[in-house]
Image: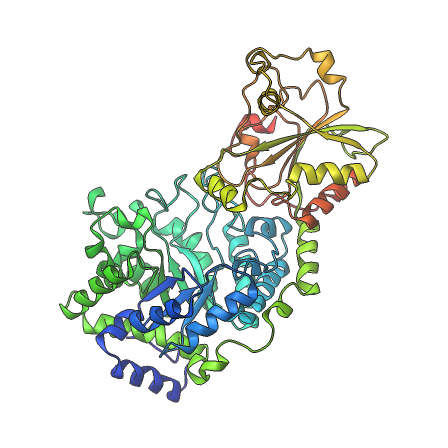
Length: 589
């Protein structure tokens, strides 16, 4: 059923005997437990010990904390587990995906903008060296999605770009780097995100390609990784209507299922057509795109029967464990299918050498903090910043370079996205806004250091808030009728930087008439628009004539950004990894 001598396992006879003998001795409860990853919810030793002993977990994902705490947690987990655990992390952008003080190196789209696979390889190696230091052994990465739809916010900054050849090249380089660090990879999100504008966490997600087009694009990416020894795949909750109609012409829309519940996709496409022999774990099992097609009691065994081997996270541990135990004992999950899943799970653990290590060796010795933030990691992040920042649109050829002799007074307009419930929660947890500089303040201070008179724009709404804070009666006309005379507005500065700091979705502009939030004045003043997160801001400010994607606002990025603004057009080395014009003709003029 599973060839443990072939990729990705490459096991010898002794290793295969360990897999087979371990499965033969397992209780029903131990078999079911191996099918689950769980996200830890605390550091208490009693809680962690109970988690692995009661549910016999196959894997855990880190509870994001500083390196020393994560390592302590992982030590407790491994020392109390009968079978060594997968301990996974989201090292998509760096070691910050395994511990809170890990090194951010670069997002997928940022690395895609460099056009250099060596940066993807560095990301794979350096981020996972930090992961290994804290006791993690599996990366839920690389992100192999292809960003076709500018409205897709789920992977816009995570994917390497919109070209399948580049995504394949960068993903393989990441895999090679991660393997150098000694970490197994679960590439995601099969069969491929990036087409739907919706987020699978809260709605259905669709991939519209038929077999031919899919094999040329997403299939090419996954086949490249499979040939390179990909360890595991994370199944996405993504429906494939056109593909399913080709495979089964009688299928109705009501019968369509997300990949993680669909045998034709997880077994027929991934295993039979692509020849993938490794392990499959679902994306989070509580996401709406997986849970809205049937009851959870039906869904869990259906996923295993479709070809998935492990679940990412319980919903309720007791309830889900009981559901799967009943499904196995009642025959909904056959002995053959259970053995196949366990063989892949334990086969991968044997491939990683976990079965040959004493419990105290599963988490490396030494001070975890000493392995975090090494100079070569920071140097890689700085190089990626220098190579990635992209001058996407440049219609006014004389705007750059920006130097004090030319533009002494620079107004910075700080544009953010709409605040969500998590933003408010984070603010509460931090006890307010805190003292950390926002990107606009950081940019202002860096420009001042270079000799500019840089200042932040205060909107009419902010002025009203300040009046209320001072106990004054607010002047609402500032907001509803506070138009500026053009000459007066223009005379206040020599250049405007519209700085967009929007992580997901669309920018939230103020609605004051004639204010400075929206750059209506591109023919009145030189305007440079810069995005430090989502690269799709041209859809909302198509009128800007100079537009730059910086991809993030980390210190190395902001330093490189200011340096390039001062040096001029030729200093921008990045190439657009997606269509940052968002397919809109007016954003190009």
